[in-house]
Image (cartoon, rainbow, N blue to C red; front, side, top):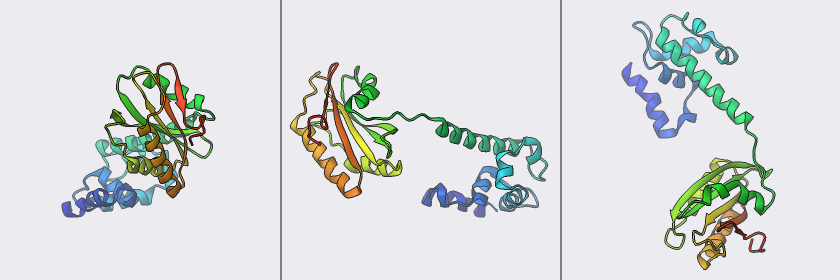
Length: 220
């Protein structure tokens, strides 16, 4: 029984959570079976007793009526279902910030950058409506000395199903004028984006109470 139970965990580690069936996911959650029933048999029984819709509205009283499901297992199942529902509701309730201009992008991130004494590089990921999916920091330091990982940025864009991105970094000196390194970095991203059909919408450099937009200056 222990050897069989290790398989879903190994499968998850090797292939990711999406490779697991609902029976395997529930088996991991249950952790153990009973004296007369393996964890997989218990998992299969629960999925046979309750439809997907029933599971979404499952109560502790209902699940603990299943033989082999005590208070501890029942609470774990109910809590996991509710946690998943809460996450989905949170995502559905989000109001996305839409970026139509360079000023929109600047206003979205300026509070994060204005107090920074180091040069940071981050990316705003957008959907097809130019709404923000995520703003993620990728590098901290000096852009002239550190290597911005282009592959990592585009890997994240693909993971987030982002159609376009905005590059963001700051100049602690206060002067937002781009250096040659900034221009080279932008060109590198543009060329990589063309291959992957991910558009570089802009590159914003933040200075002291001001910013520079590659798009506004027709450099993109």
